[in-house]
Amino acid sequence: MQVWAVPRALRVALLLLLLTSSNVIAPPPTDAGEDIGASGRGGRHRRRAFPGPHFHPTSPTNVTTQLGAHAYLPCRIKNLGNKSVSWIRNRDSHILTVDRYTFISDERFTSWHEAPTQTWTLQVRYVQERDAGSYECQVSTEPKMSHFVQLNVITPSVTIAGVSDLYVKSGSTVNIKCVISDALEEPTYIFWYHGERRVVSANSDRILSVDRIPPDTSIGTLTIPSVSLADSGNYTCAPASLQMASVMLHVLSGELPAAMQRGTTTSATKSSSSSSSSSSASSSSSSSGVLVVLLTTAVWLMRSST
Image (cartoon, rainbow, N blue to C red; front, top):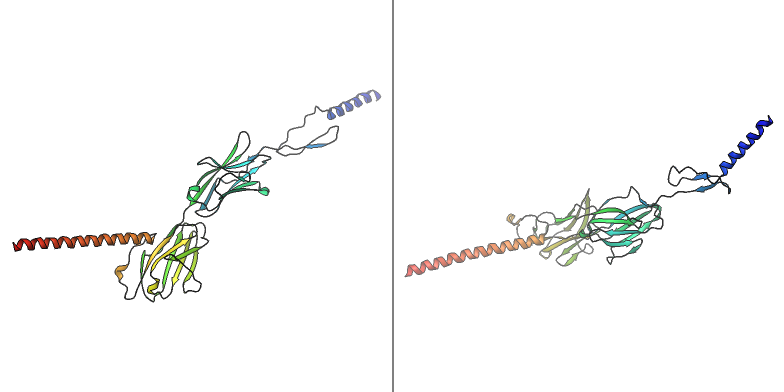
């Protein structure tokens, strides 16, 4: 029995020596950030492996907003470390921001970092049509890492419902409707103007209202009860950050001729100009015709007298 005791003890000693040797290589981690245990002279210790920066797969590649609204372009980056994040406008390669610093004189552009979600967001305030295009979120690695976001800008349509020239009888109630279609958001306000003067409902009989019709239409209504001749003139609808539309109101003291109705257009001011031009052309044409008749008659009379 003692003959086998020595070899067994040697085997145990050799096994312990192998286990405590610094040449023992730990197996590679099966996942990024996995804790790895190893025995050494200092006892058990832990090592942690980190991957480099990378874009989160949930980062969007398309953002759509409407004219005059604010746009937010998020760029989610994992394990950024000490790297910097830049936003670049692709159409002119202009560097807009680096981290929280802005490098463009246009104050509509800013960026900020949301630590809980590891997101760098580019904000474009009061979006204009020329802001549409591709924007690059770039990380200062070698080589550079880039994530592209396409900004789409929708321009709502603004029209006055009905005819461009509105003829009404004195004493009647008038409703002028401003229709804003293809609008992702309801305008923050809709101003009305009578000529150059803004129309307000306070201390007057004017009634202003706004209705939202899903999915993308808003209607602003100006109501004028018991109109008088003083209410005649141009009325303009001016939604926030959008184009304007107008209508010409004619208040008549007598009966309303049916022939005074005209066609519809998106801008009553333009239509009024067109109508005036057409009327002027018609009048000019009629005058020319009368003049020709008069001259022809005069020539005939002169020949007859001779």
